[in-house]
Image (cartoon, rainbow, N blue to C red; front, top):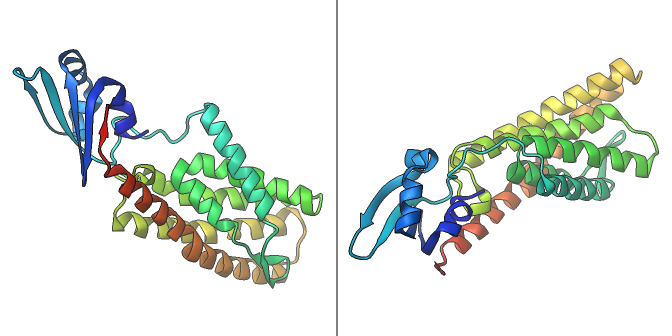
Length: 252
């Protein structure tokens, strides 16, 4: 939840400019906000009380959160988000171009990047896992648990960027270092998850190791390509769009 949504109920006037948020409060709300430890910490750049006008003026860094990001919150919004993510991933995972034995270049991998980055590693993991299970049931009637867990692990690694300080694409806040970290998390997650899936198939499903080597290699290359070509640009584009929206002035 961004700062704007946390403080809007208290303020009379809000102006968003560049990387700063200016908010005007009445005397009662101003006194309450000064006592809030979260607001008095890293969020606050400057505050002052103007007796003549009877208002308090705060200046904050845009895109940060007044409350510490939670890795997971079980509420209606989270459940709905997981349901939408799982449904989209499950419904689109069958779309792909064959690149190896039982392996395809699947655009659906970009959805794991999007849901992981926007909603965190836990939401990404659950949505990826359930979505893969749904796709397996719809296409073959058999769940390949190693690969289903692999989809969840991939989304969880991509979702690590959600916990990075200052990264808030829903409010248009991100830096170049965030994109670099996102790419590293994504590539590492793809490789590790596919290695896990290959090991799982060999250890528990009795699949031949030579087939899995080819399968894991092909899947790693194709998933990384989709992640870099579709997933990363989608998240950046979403953040940039919200950054433009955040530069508008809002008056109550």
